[in-house]
Length: 208
Image (cartoon, rainbow, N blue to C red; front, top):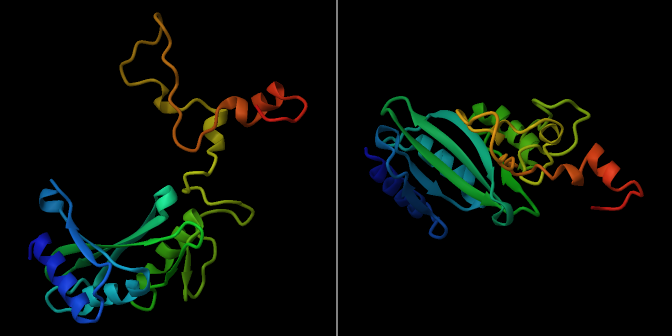
């Protein structure tokens, strides 16, 4: 099946199961052999969509590859899972979206046990709660760590203390001429807004 056929078939299956709103299918442009159908589903039908992709004989996406999230700021968080069919040698991406002020999503560990640590990592890095997960304990970060480092508002403190590697492009001359302003990645404040330089610039404790 082509990615277009996979997407259309899964949308039809979901509609037949009573899911008639909020389901769309797109195919990544220019992906060639790596193109995938992406199916967007509502949060409350997330487990059902993954189960349908697994159990349908034409799709047979029985291998759970990975799950992660994307911080889309005011639009919330997009959660994406990639499933693969060992038998048919094709894949599909399933995607849903949770609001920023209440990021919750039903766990799919009972559908794919392999989703266990993927959900734990996503919970840890983005602060998304997977309701029904048996054990959302820290996976990568030390117990004393505060915050969710893959959220875009998270301050990348090490990038304040050390120069950003992208400040100089490969092959750019090292001396002479005007110095290009360093690039700051998302999440990195100005040195005068955070850390030792902020304290020197504002000895009375005020803000810059």
